[in-house]
Length: 226
Image (cartoon, rainbow, N blue to C red; front, side):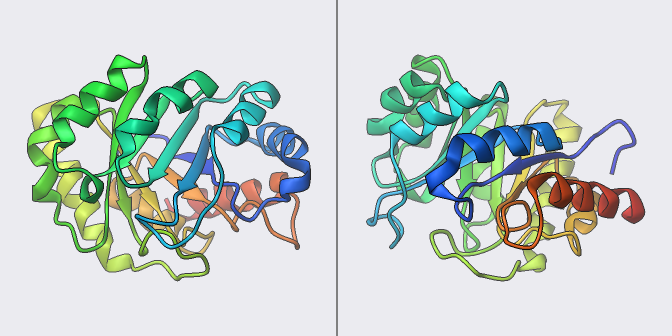
């Protein structure tokens, strides 16, 4: 990992208290979160259903942090305008959810957002190599999307190392994000592979720690791993 690269932590709220989302947002921001990663699932592209643009609006009002919306949905471009209007700065869609990813990237930019693309565990990085110059971010899924409680599949960090090489050799600013099973015990391994952003769900929002305590533990693990 480059000395100049600081790994950012992006809490996902799926394990937060949905009855007190604004309070959760303020607590995590005060505790040192870098940005928000809000997972939208439609019950079609993935089995689960989560929330819509109204939850993004809650976070936009409660927090000053950047918001990225991870659209685990079919026909993702159809949803871009609503989430941009709600306050998202970055829209992440799945490569597997569209036959025309370049068009989806253009659509995200067309509503004033940065464009990110996510790839499922079965998708090789070569599938998106040609898109890298047009992307702000690549999200490498380390679990199967749409199902909670899964363990990270660390073998997929090989994709991160490949993407890191391609991005650095081309002199691109595209960031690499990992999503799924990030914990204090493995976040340093993610950083060493070349990750820029780590999505953390239950590692931040859980019953045994405050968000500030959880984020401090993740930062300490990063520091120790270096």
